Structure formats: structure tokens, C-alpha cells
Length: 329
Image (cartoon, rainbow, N blue to C red; front, side, top):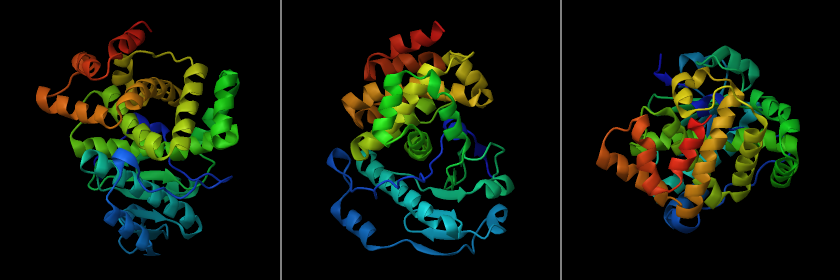
């Protein structure tokens, strides 16, 4: 069996196209994250190739999936091909952005399953639609193919406890609260790619909260510059969940200790806190924030939970106060 790692993002974030309104096709990179014109023109000129999946791993071979590939490959049932191709295009777009912004991007492979296929073939026993990314090479990210996934229902169940201003923000960004809940699963898939990007750059550590914050910074940074409407959905839903959830576990030490044993809504609460710092740093520094984090790890050696805040605070002031808030519960 492949070496699987279920991250906090793994246990709560999906990347699935929403049924009400399909997002616009990926835009070409702009600004400091722009890829070169030749690369972009090549991507535009070549359509993904789709056909029977003759190289499927054993667990997927009996599902009758297609394999569509260009730079990235996605395995998906024919009836969900449009969603699979949309996912493929968005992930390729993020990888192009990362190459331009950070000098490298990971190879990744995608699998999109419906509920029945998920039950039959998912290598990790999590509820339908709570995706995960593996440690094999290239890493494989699993996503739901339909909108009836657990994350959307969880977000909707907390709507009443969110502040009205947060509900209104989600509605403005997504068209409706329900659509925002489903979109959150889709845009959250960028967080999974953020984990793979962190590994590719060598900025993954044994400190779980640090890894999750870094992956969120990659995801939010890409969306903020290239897909600001999606960044608003991501940020808005997380803010609402931070208001609505009252977790029993509230410290960074507990997050690292319990990690995947935490309730899913508690994961969202922590992710909202990570997003608060990612927003503060990425809004002001852009990709330079993550470049500085990488340089610090290279210069200082292995990171421990105890000194993580001390290293991050000079790069983006405010981490000391942020961490103290966790320590206070």
C-alpha cells in the first residue's frame, strides 16, 4: 500500500465543481505569478486526451473510470468528465502560477469519485467527499465528483450560529449560502495542492499546524492573485465557521497532538485561525512570505513547534500575539 498521510486539510477539504453554476474557465496568470507566454500558449493549444484507463491501479481498475491527461491526469467516470476536466484545468493553472512564483511545482495526479465509488475504492476510510492526498510519487489527491458531500452539509448545519455579516459575505461571493458551502469544497482543493507544493519546496515539517498554515498560504495566495472571487468564498466560509464552532480543543499543542482525531468542525475552526494569519501575511507580502519561510528553514535547520512562532514572527509580525491567543484557550 502507498504511504498515506491524512492531513488536517485532507480530512476536511474537497475540490468539487458545484452543480448550480460552473466557475469560469481558469484565467491566465497575471502579475508577479505570471507564467511565460510560450508555456501558456502551449497549454491553450492542446486539449486534454481522454480514454479508457488502461493503467489504473488495482483499487480503481474495476470502476470503469476514464483517464484524462495533459500536464496533470485525472481519473473520473464518463458521466462526471466535465467536472474532472474542470478540476484538471484549475490544478494545472495553480501549478503554472507556482512555477512562476516559486521556481518549481509538484507533479500531481487526481482521482474524482462519486459516493458509491468512494466507498468501494477510497484507500482512506473517511466520509464521502473529505479528500486526502497521498505521499506516493506523484502524490494522488482524491476528490468527490458530486455536491452531496459531507463538508457542504457540515457548513450548512452551522449557518444559524454564524454572524449575519458573514452569511451575507458568503452569499455575495457565491450567489447563495448553499452554493458557497459547495464551492468551499471545490476551492479548498487548492489547499491539498498546497501540501504537495510545500513538499516540493522542502518546507514541510513535523509540526502539523505549521504545515497546515503553509498549505493554506499557498492556496490563498494563488486564489487572491488569480481567482479573487474564490478567495472571498474561502475566506468567508472559514470566518463564519470560526464564529459558529465552539471547540473543546483550542490550542496549537492539542492540534498537533490529536490532529486527525479532532472532529471535522474543529478542523475547520483551526483552519479559520490559520487563514487569519495566512491572509495577513499574503495580503501584505504575496509570494515573498513563503519564499522567506523556505529560506528560514534552509538556514535554521529542522523546525520544532516551540520555535516555529519565533521564526515566523520576524518574517510576518503578529505571530507571537496570534499564538498567545491559542495558549489562552
